[in-house]
Length: 91
Image (cartoon, rainbow, N blue to C red; front, side, top):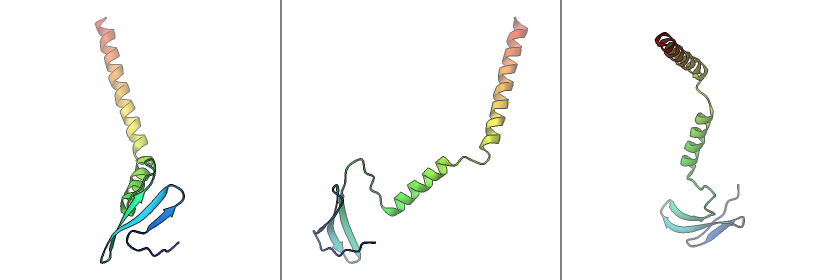
């Protein structure tokens, strides 16, 4: 970890495209400004962690998903069979 000391108004450059500026200091709180390309996501850590967690949950199937799918397909198949049977009887 790189540790830097900055004063109000001073900047930190990260690579060629990111600039962090110290905007305000109030007691133990520091307000920073971040200039970065629009396509680069910049989040507070707690928001970033929630996004990661949501992505992991979305990519992980429900352990019951296969069983639910099988039951849904069975019901769908039964409905199609019943409709086909009704149509055959009507003809």
